[in-house]
Image 1: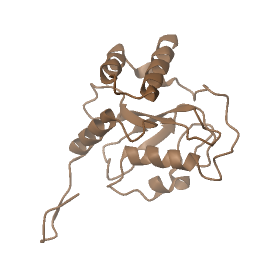
Image 2 (image 1 turned 180 degrees about the horizontal axis):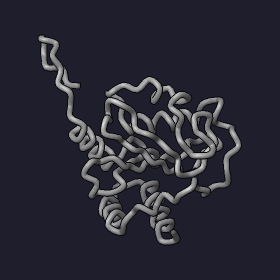
Image 3 (image 1 turned 45 degrees about the vertical axis):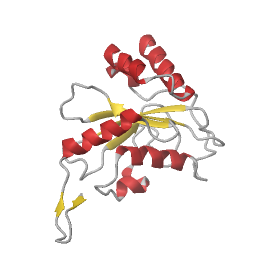
Image 4 (image 1 turned 180 degrees about the vertical axis):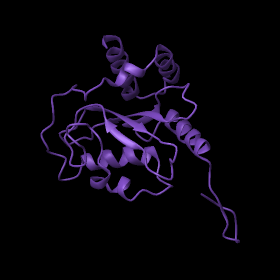
Amino acid sequence: MIDMGSEGSRVVVPRNFRLLEELERGEKGIGDGTVSYGMDDADDIFMQSWTGTIIGPSNTVHEGRIYQLKLFCGKEYPDTPPTVRFQTRINMTCVNQESGMVEPSLFPMLANWQREYTMEDILTQLKKDMMSPQNRKLAQPPEGSFQHFFFFSSWRISSLEACILELDENSSHTAYLIFFLMAFLFFIS
């Protein structure tokens, strides 16, 4: 919401404008590059299906692991939270082990959703939760194992080409690692 002055009136930013802002921020990269997100399909005019990536935090069992997630923003987003599902298998207290879904009742950010929260906030909080005492040492599934369907199946060559264009000489080595891993997994699927 945007405060419009002393009258106390507020203007609610429409859903698509909000999602365009999030897309722009996601494309620019977030912080140290260990959390990222973007749209699954550039042709999705409703901007519903998103992919997120979290690189596991240091000094935890998640260190160096790359976790892929799906976020689905329904028609009521951002008034209601997106659904969040890990594509990569992970053992966390807030994640359903069968489906990979982040359980809203076990993840306070989703349970107490506020319109101001973003997909970036969700991914950043999930990364923080990986470092929590109850999650930092939990035994994990074998590295590289995925939930029921494969994350990269919806990617197109144009998406990979867009990634190549986004990477430049100022990008971190992490970005290159993520790109080459994504390309490899795409071509073996």
